[in-house]
Length: 265
Image (cartoon, rainbow, N blue to C red; front, top):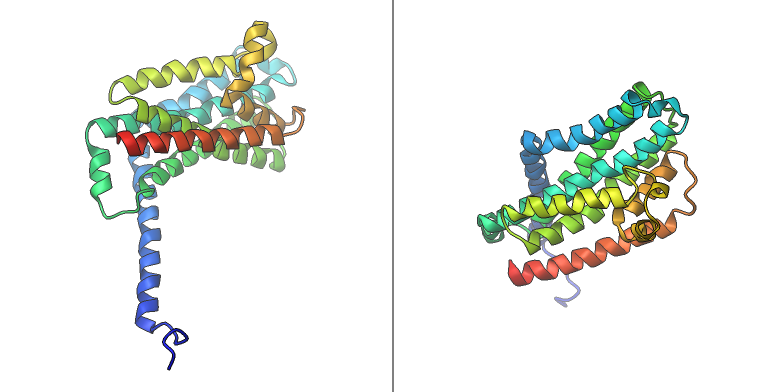
């Protein structure tokens, strides 16, 4: 009988299937471990959840911006963007830098697990946190600020937030390859807060100087904010230029970060 045309033995097929199941299981276990590790860390969870929620309540309800028809809706989009930036920047940037510094990343590489599982686990954590943040802000907007959202708008904002966390995961990954240890939180904050301000998340872009307004499209947070504003009912033009810009940014920054991680560890 021709061996090339003979069927694959059942034992070999079972071994191949088992190998695939084990690889998938490794990815799932790493993602689960990363999510549990961060959810059990109040120093990460509480600021990530409370900062955008408290800011939204302060500006949309307490300080009276809720008296206008569009104020709470506009702030829902901006603070959703502001909120989903943090898990990627801090979850990737700060934790990766510290884990490189204390040798945990070296240990992870020595373990019998797929190389990408470590990074995909952190990405899953950031996307889960983004979903929780956007859901919390939507609940506050509807219950406390009286914003009326259709199911489609809520779904669009949720999808924008979850997928919008990816560019900031890429940026956090790059930061984590640039610095180690205690320098990472300072660098992330030095980028996070000015980027939010210069993207029009705290004030409308019309209130910024003309030079800063022209530079707003440089920041990924600006493009994500445009998608968030479109999701809650504002006319921001076609969404595709913003989607393409964020996709190109994510791929380019991830490629650069991966190259640095392979070279510098």
